[in-house]
Image 1 (cartoon, rainbow, N blue to C red):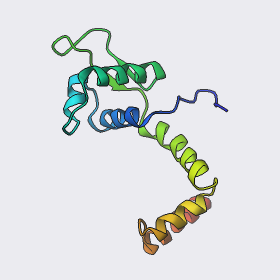
Image 2: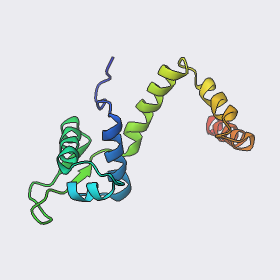
Image 3: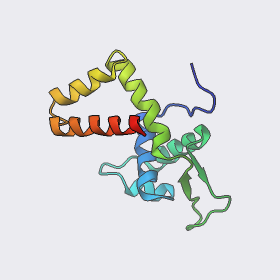
Image 4: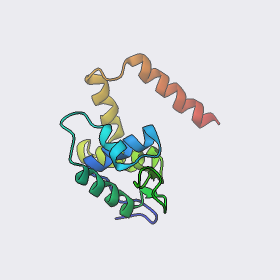
Length: 130
């Protein structure tokens, strides 16, 4: 069920490109290509993904080419627009919709220390008091 004004989900490759926009700001397709390690994808592949992102509402471009005839693209949403639905999907699909299971897995895999967990609990308790 899709909520009103919710952006479509991103594929892994689309998310990778969005991360570049969020980290580096406005970019041309060639500049995006420079952000990849070798072997780099083909320029047409990157251009296609950027145009899909534009259709999905994640990026936009200027009306006039600015840099050597290339369009400059920029993100229209911040990472938080992607983060919340992605996290919810991850929790639903891999942790039986249990955020407690997520935290437990992080502790078990030693991705988060007990001190960090206590700090998170303190932050949550302080938010409740506000």
